[in-house]
Length: 219
Image (cartoon, rainbow, N blue to C red; front, side, top):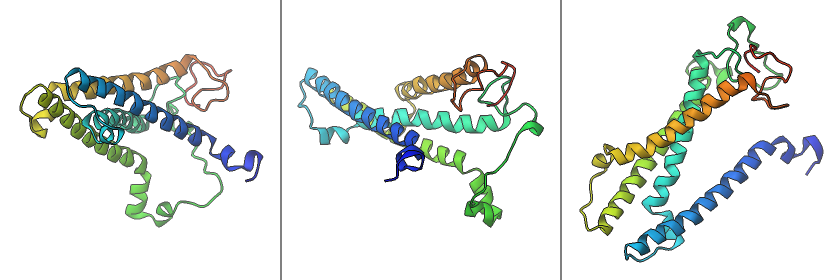
């Protein structure tokens, strides 16, 4: 493997570190979730489950997809909102005046959908938001399915009859699970939009230059 700036690790360091942090966090969630779930079962006099059984449980599926759902919603909405909306002074906003925006394209091979034109180019031009929409819908489905299974397992432990998926989908519990994550994601986005007006982080693409006035919009 080549060393220095041409090495694979240097050129992909950001995604590799984030992937490692994601994997470590998922392992930690699984370990802690298994212990918490088994404690919950033991408290109710039910037999505990193995790791394999836990990974199939509503407890794990619901918790995992519940968080992914809110993250994909956050990023998808952010991508779309920044297309049409502006925030004066924020590094996360497009320039207030479209004439000041620089759409310079570096030399290289143009992606084939852009070269093909027509519908392919239209789809490619919106592929980021469309992909986030798909990921959100898949995660929303996984969350609702896991949450429904978990509620029915809890009801069974309490000697109650199970409920249908549609009934669970309309329940306050399901929407409480969703909304508690959605509000935190939108708050996080709001914080970077507003804080990047007045605060700086040297060398970060999410920040304006240290010497830039607060009124400067865009990186």
